Image 1 (cartoon, rainbow, N blue to C red):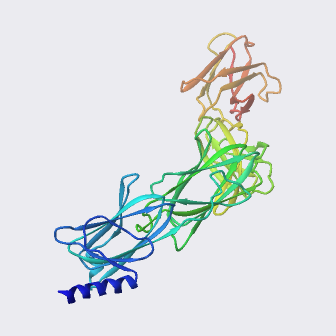
Image 2: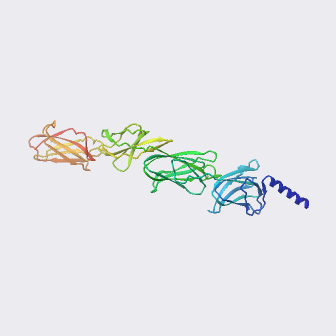
Image 3: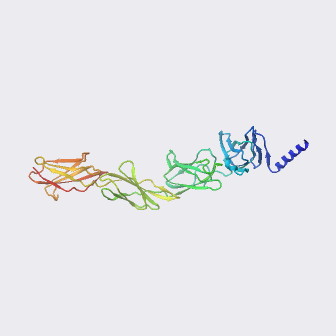
Length: 441
């Protein structure tokens, strides 16, 4: 008996020399965070062992566990929040060679109390944990162009909100270097999106990812919000360190002069002044309503829109953009330019004199749109001298008709008609119809 006790004490001394601690109990056991190896096992009666540790300061913990094929998973519980997460998982495929398998989990943790649970079916394992404090001083959550902002984030903390005060209009470039998958957005102080939430799934402890957000911002207060995407790349690595570098460039301005250079019944060409220092221009056309139906992007200072409706009212606007870090950063839109296409050519259906000193003119409803029609009456087929001019408002009828009185009887009267569209104080005329004539009673 004395020899057996001596042998056990000798083994304990050997394990102590190599920083190894043997644990066979299923009760909660304090876990050393200095890399000391714990040799333990689960039993038929107790399928899990629990280890506790406390972090006085946030930092990183590298967990390492080696076990045989009966191991299932290792989970971590945050006692402050009550959340539990599996940080290491084993499967049958891991033990295809019936060998012991080692896995690690690298976690970024805040200060607090934690419980680590090893779950298995009568399995022997070795476990170690190594803690490194996070010493880097943060510059705070107000971003500055003078120095980068370095931050630590643990999974489950929620979004980090970074404030940026823009004192005058600038193009702002956010460079985000992150050692974990993240999602970001940028909002105004009122909560409106300047940059909608986007996921950046790259970024690990071994390979930091760099992404950019480029925005043209007016004077005001803005917030860049960043949150961790848990388990997007490596489920055994959560949280991480990220750095935001903020730089300013010239504010992107839109063109100030826009006009129609050419128009037909189905096309319009708009031009705008060149702006220095931009990559190109984006132009939009709407049908006069709120929907911008056509969008074109290019480097030229003129743009043609085709397939338009004759006589229809259109709105145009333009903005500039700078292409930087693989994305387009746009200016605000220019002032809206209003213009219409020419109405289609009118066609007279019939001209007659239904009664004395009167002429009735019938013409087809215009193809497309128009505000109204203009009729000319003359006793000269060249229309050098016009006896009467009349404007008729367009109606929904398939056939338009108007009777002109007080004409000179017993003479031939010539009539022609054209459609017109009024928009923004300007009248756009279509082509005259072929003239028709009748003998006035």
